[in-house]
Image (tube, rainbow, N blue to C red):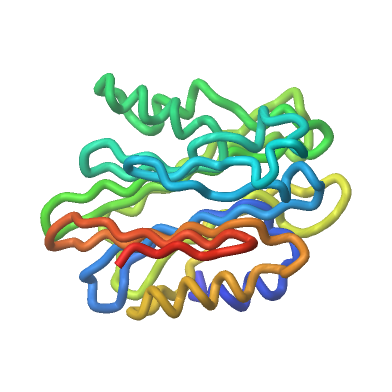
Length: 242
């Protein structure tokens, strides 16, 4: 599979929906986790990322304008020991609870399916980074309908136990901006991960469609220490840990 530039992919697609990128810096010293959300409706756009212990939650930017919270308010990122979970829905909590009970990422997601938002049947995308001293591996998953058939689910799992320096993998919910929205197809895209993650985060935010982008989260995990540093971009501000 050809390695492509994430910013190019984002500039070419006005509505990839929600997306996850996991990868390793060229010096193999940090693992990078990216999660972004977009929205076409007023309800979807009325959101911000808010820090919580070990991760983030989505919140209504204006609570008075919140309509249906069921598929837009959740914990996208949680941390369990040295495991970092990122998803586009409340399956974050399912994975966390299963792993806390000694079960696996895959066990958790086999109990879930795509979102019940006919006719889009939005896929549930999930990622897991598992850190051990000086080493890391990661996984991605997508749960989606069978070519738009809401009566049939498809579950796909992708495992990267030995990441390659300077390389990451990108999965997102929608192929492109259509009605109904077509689900992501194929394997996660192989993308370049640069060494300067701060500049990378700013470039990703700038590359998301200005009308549809809502929030962006970027985490780096130091492979030597396990220390995580986070940046949050919302439609109105940016918060970065130093």
